[in-house]
Image (cartoon, rainbow, N blue to C red; front, top):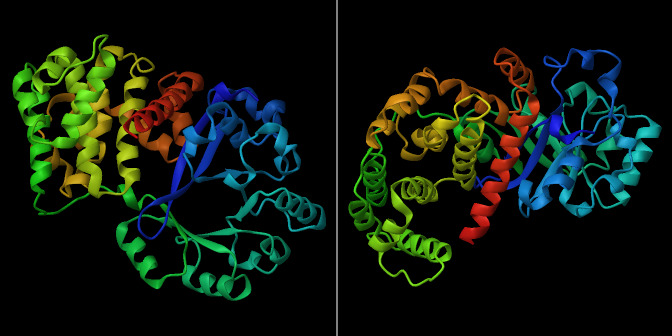
Length: 414
């Protein structure tokens, strides 16, 4: 299998406290729109390979999922492949995700039992209510079941599984908004929650912004001015202990002769361009501290992914704007205000504002591709790549490089 021809997205799974407990790998090999030959005899090439395992081996499980479990889809063919030779990650960290294309017959049940004996965890998804009884033998071996909130009566399904399979952990899926999440959480009985609810845009709100965030907003306003003063930015940084320590540590690591002890000196060493980029990243991370950690991750990954896509879209010179666009793409969620009000607070204008507020302008296609990509909406991603005559490989590389960048950034902070 050619990993470079792979589209990859990581979908977070939350607990009731909005803490990420696992990730699902969703991938598509090649692009049927860009490679019509895939519709012919080559379509099943590599079908016996578990794509997610190859990606884990290539990227490292820590890069993809840190210390959390990772759900990896298997097909009715790849289920029988040599799993251990494809990836040496700890078996207990991997959950093989099956669906109703795997028939509940003896040959498959025996293979699933073997996988269970090897220490892997197992999950089922896409089961209709009419499938429940037929899959009884497989469900006895299953650790997780995904229940799609949009397609079945999830409360009744929960009662069914709780009674017949008390050891199965339930994942409520297809959650589109926070109201649905809160309702499901109140009824209880689910261990994991999946959906877009954590990143739903705020359309109204009159929340007061916390004093600490006001300080951060002031700093963002200063550094995103075209010709900001280094000393003014340094003085605002000095009001926040965490930012001060982080800045001094970073600059001291960069210099041959360490010993920078003042914020103004550190700011001068970085210069306008690098200080602006560091502040935008560090400040947004601090601003998001009272939100689910996945929102911070989403913002930072979008920022780097957008910057990396600059060359793919022929906009390498727009790297700073693309980075800022991705970074601020969840600003409405953070400040709990409509995007227009949130962008006005941080004095964002020009192409970044056009892309985030109205989906218009030169940067907008990059943001649109990112949103479709991170949701693993592969048909739409393939269509967009075809329209812009872009190959899979550089887009995939841009995403995987952003994952590595995020890993290094977080390890550095720790």
